Image 1 (cartoon, each protein chain N blue to C red):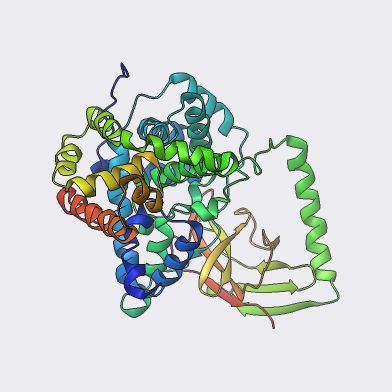
Image 2 (cartoon, chains in turn green, red):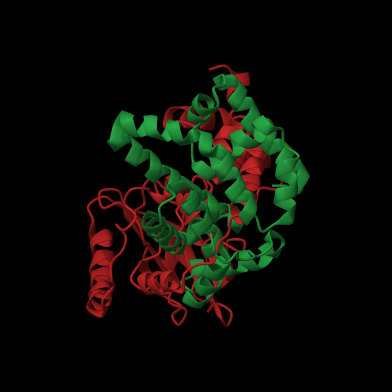
Length: 194
Length: 250
């Protein structure tokens, strides 16, 4: 993929984002343009990873970004960082889209999805190739193989933990635990606090 | 599902990897489990870092489209905001867990999901003009309502406030007399008191010291109202202590 990799703003620049959000909530379009420049790249990246379809991804990313504008006043800093708020929305919307498509396409699509699941290596490779943040890449490597596969399938592909379990042929309980302890290890490695 | 099982769902929850049913069960559990809510928030922030790591360049055409669209999209007003930060201790912890939990779905539920475009509507000028006319009529209608109930209060500096509530119309009017003009660059903002959390009910005209204002929005069970001094244009949530708090008449 020849896509230019865009270096996202470091989350430590969060105070600026919070100020921007405050202005956006009061209808400041200039401030929204500034916020857009910071969040659009990650939003598209997350949505595209889950949907894997250029046209649909852009459509969903656009919905998400407009929704950020519309709902800015709902953002509360005590509920987490701006980037988390925006990316949670993006991920949720992408996952909603995938699952609604699945629901309508019913079982054969689901079967196809699981057939493709062994692609996780490719997913992970692609993701890792595009990781712009050395730290995230390094921290992902500190996870066990199972943790890393579970977390990346769930986040980057938008699979439910049941689907992760099926595609890796693991018991449900194991996947639940791997998702949690994998993320905990990442959290500690990245020094994330809430 | 046992409590222990629910607690182990923090990771799957943060990654949106639960079914709707399981998500509901987890949220009910986390509402009373500070540790779970805290962990879910932290793991959600961690997942966001995974998202940041796959940032791509954004097509400039998309930015133009989004910037064009937002000019026609009406922004939501904040639904529920706390009046004051709790001073710490137990109340704070309780409240934090609810906030933290809400963060994990990042207000996704509140966004209203499927109907992304439903609020979208161009606001034309004639609509604005008609609105001010309707507001005057609405004030009169509340004051004249057969079930209008009134409560009065002394405000700071010898000002007097009266609030009139009509249950059948689900509306309230605030009447002020002798209020000091707000400091330069500030306005008085009105709030509905929803059991301790404040919901914006609009601004007062800063050039008048006596005024009847229709509170914006439905009373919707609010127990009273408050007034704060805010920067011009108003705030999404109160940024100062209230200059007045009034309980609605029963």
